Length: 249
Image (tube, rainbow, N blue to C red; front, top):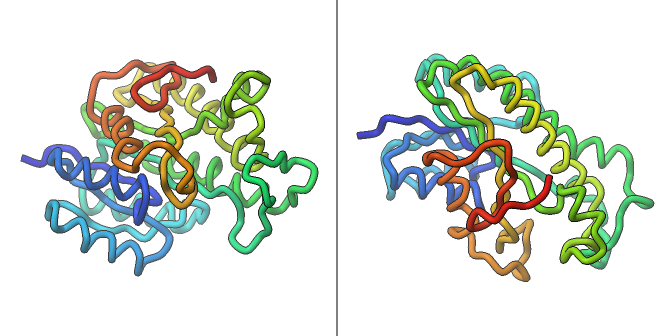
């Protein structure tokens, strides 16, 4: 029996799509959302082979009007939400030039407008969607907010010259994930006396369009920790990555 309802942002491909697939296999109703309606509908058709409990919601989390419309639609269709998975994120603005070296430090040649655009999606979009859907999460017996972060957002690892990610200094993306971590810490405190819990997890370095083929984890492995955080009894107030390895904030 399908008893839980989950909304996943940026779920038309990669880790978001695989997370939807794994949740459907566990009899969770999934609302798949993304900016591109055609790609979203195609993803839903693909997932109907797994379960009929899949629907599409067009949503650009950086657009306040679309966020409000999404909250209204979920309210009208379901009346509650059990799981919000804030997966949508960008590394840079489409069409902008990237450094030739993946590990280049971008801070001195990053366009401020481009940095703001990354934050509009990864940070402010995530926050405004969470705020908009919070009343629906309160209608769940045990609502969960899962924010996807990255080891690249860890200030301690970025400052440690012996860290394997020390030289990966993509300023806009990394700092946006640092803010996602801080956002989660604040959420955890704000939600302390409610029925809703907030978590930050990193799927690890996964072979996606963002992670590139050089990554060492396959997509199903990266999605597993997200599904576990959504459904299992897992610790709060800590930052975990693949196979529940704790990493510093």
